[in-house]
Length: 479
Image 1: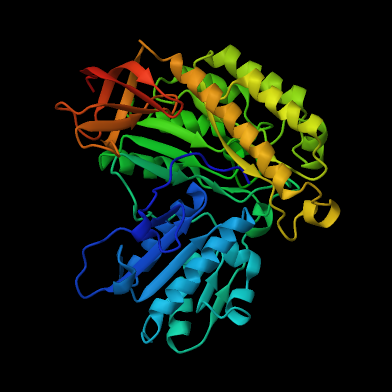
Image 2: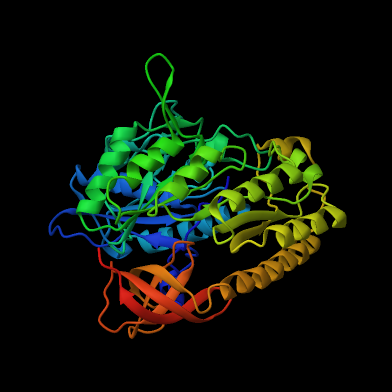
């Protein structure tokens, strides 16, 4: 699976208690109502799914809380993309079970990809949870909760070919009130040999377009200024009529959302290189409020490794796609990546090709991992995980160092330029400064003065490092 780009809320050491890169549910008003606590791990799709779960359970009388000690129902929405992600959830479950002792009314459930992959193992072998619910079974949560309240264990990991939750309005959880995610499709048809997503989230199916447009309109009317359209492979979105004819492509959907209002900023994630078309690129160019930023995972710079990964493209084909993006959108278009080091049989020459690809593209930033074999995937069945851990980590460090160089280089291009920033809130270090993102998805920090969250502000960039741009507000953009 491609990682869906974006920052995660990082909790303090005291708050962590075994949580790493997790988001927790917010507090809702509702004295006397049953309390629901949700932790979400992994990609932004999981966070969006947690909002669907909160909406379903709200109709059952639950309100969300950020305090697990107040909750009657504790849910962990999980990720299976790497073994490390699953181990973190197991560690968290052990902690939650220890705090649950003596509270017979408290129930714990595991949702999402880890639930789908491990199914009854979590219930029967490890006995850490009361219910296990896959990504397509959230509508069944009320029935499953009723079942566990009678003292039974409950499981539903049925994968659907139709479920998109299109009719459910998500309850916004860990939100800044400015930016929001909209899930436009579910599942994945790309059988990358290293990836569990086709097995944990099922086949691709697209959501009816008018429900997406309506959700975006509603968010804008509530004061949100930016939406990100989400999918495991967002560019393969297509809505078909009853005769199987395509009525709306992703580019057409992107345009429809952009046309809601010029002051609604639009992003999307994640793109598979084989599916992002010239039609999409020209749509980005046409609409000023569609951000000039593309997350385009490469995974490797070696054609030989790409073939083993079943990525369906070569190094040369990927480079041609990058060239096309630069040709249509210009060199200022932000591009980020996913990269895996130490995949099966990867040699030093293969690794050098990854580094040289990075030198060619000069990504703005990226998400980097060393290969973690996932049970049940084609790679686990057919290929030997023969690169030792030390080598994987050393290569990963070289990729990270290379990316830091390129990120700094790309950020320096913004020096003495004015960029448009959507303010998302205070800087993490000081409430004297505001923080937002530029069109290219770069974090920008500037003195607060009299600007506020939700403002579009023109900022002159005076300094930078590899991660952040810093500057002075020139003026608030009139909207």
